[in-house]
Image (cartoon, rainbow, N blue to C red; front, side, top):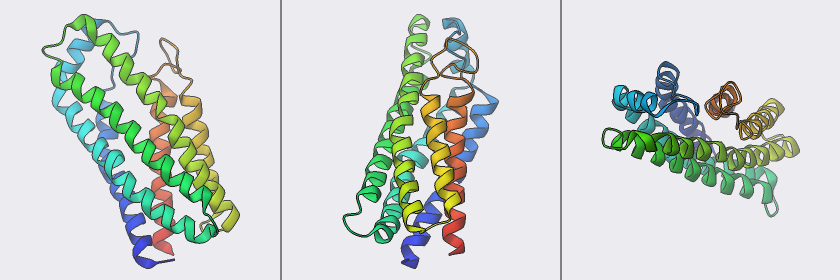
Length: 217
């Protein structure tokens, strides 16, 4: 492997994790009320936690809307060299990674607009805007699953990384695809429930695993 490409890919993955970590803390400390929350509850939440939420959105956008593309390009270079030939699966992985970054930016843009305009928004409209944000977040699962599955297939076929990285990728994809079905109005299977929260955490851990493997090489 090209040492420079390996370092860029590994360090960009670690940078994503480092930027996302404060966002995880903020989201766990101040979880967005679920889809069953009243308009008054949502208005109070965005008024009370506006600054923290804006910081979280900014860091998430920088990590997954920006650095994820750098990581995806580096991963593509590594996988394409290992795959050889037309490199179809590695190309699919990169294209889906870019689509994932774009989808996450759409989600962040929705919640950024809500947070920025919350004091002036009609509280009655907040549930609709929040539901749109949650629905957009669920849709990020599909390109994310495609990108990690494609990467996992190349890893299994070529042995360019340990197989546990590939199996981890398939697990990340499974969690994301299950999270996309979290459409209950309340509870663990709501858009703000366990699986939609677990999905980005699984991706976060997988990125760290890839970085560690690459740096050890």
